[in-house]
Length: 114
Length: 114
Image (cartoon, rainbow over the protein chains, first blue to last red):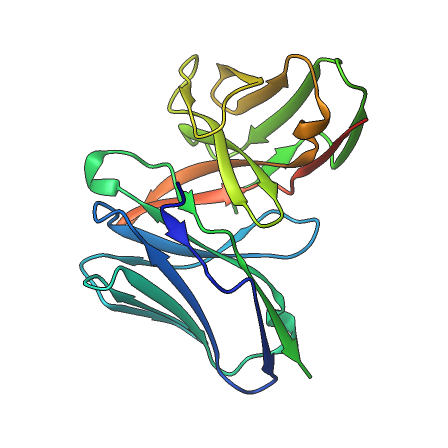
């Protein structure tokens, strides 16, 4: 049972435009969310995170938005660059329960076209 | 910088062989994890460990075991490799940041079982 879902397996965006990657979750106990970026033949690297007490977190070109009522989060990349082409995974955890394992989505492959 | 290393980047084994995948982290993290990544399925947790000699089953532990004899080292063992265990295996360790835990990943081991 997939508790974290990324319904778009792929996304193509022109360089300089905004990339929006979406993620939905089903477990209302999740209270900490992360985005990871993965290049082929490499391990995922941490990108940005957000706690459930916030609805937005920004780091340079990357912004994560959290809508708790809709159980939805999104990652915005502005402006998109060719080096952003990778697979993006969203992940969720239940920190308040003491657990620190992550539940991952299935990933969205982003292609930024020069 | 956190460094998580895995013993092999690529491995080819025969059906029925016993396979050891080693992971070492250099940041004195208590928590370590083993995932497998398959197309369309994202990252799935196999086992994790909160401390030396402690282990917990993840979502897909069948056919695997783990060993944590030292804090920095977490080994994944395939007792009798099968072709459906052909996959990318990723090790991670985690640290607590503001709001939650952040996992750092190794480069992965691409295992092929023939």
